[in-house]
View: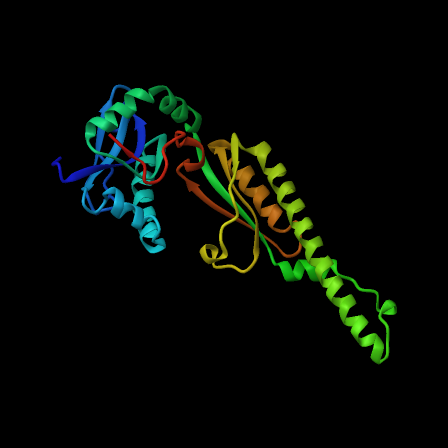
Amino acid sequence: MTGSQTVWLYAVTRGDADSSPPAVRGVAGEDVRVLTEGPLTAVVGSVDARRFGPDVLAGHLENLDWLATAARAHDAVVAAAAARGPVVPVRLATLFSSDDGVRELLRGRRGDFQSALAAVTGRAEWGVKAYVDPDSLADSLSAPDAATVPTGQSGAGSAYLMRRRAKLAARQSAQSAAGEWAQQIHARLRPLCAASRLHPAQDPRLTGRRDWMILNAAYLVDQDRTEPFHALVRQLTEWQAGLDVELTGPWPPYSFAVPEGAQPGERHG
């Protein structure tokens, strides 16, 4: 590796795993390679330091199109590594100035990586997102009493205000009901998984849906409990009218195996 290149870290696997690099290209179209240090192996790629320098990278991380493309390439490498055995995915854009920096990380965080690998062995991450149509839910909770609506010219304004108040109250009730639904879904899924994580709801611009995302969760599921977990998700889809429960995966265990402190765009010596 020359001084004009920097090292992009994708994932960490066991040192006794298949030592050949995954047959997939990295975020810069580079050949992926591996670095083994004791009981651990890092999956890395060498990228142009000028294209991935601190100032340039900071701009990239604010560009949604660049992020989407880089994330797909990064995930393809992680998924290829995960197809061979347990893997600890590393967050997008974790960079090192040299191979020595990666090796130092493997030495210094050996225990953390080994614990993380043990925790995900024989398990996969599944994503569950739940959505509700806010208008439909609000309408179902709104039942104005026609007998209380005044008649006549003077009553028209009062009737309008009452309808507005009823609509606002129904909207607030819908938010409360949606929150309760999310809690109940999560409570029913947790006993079937080894671990779970609740993530913030995604922006509608990312989901492409106008519905409320009321749950965005990840579940680490043992391989022998996959079918019961899927069956319960299917049941929950039909649990409430207007509720849509979406299952995605299996994914590399991003939500459960990333060591603390490995943040996007972080650079190491």
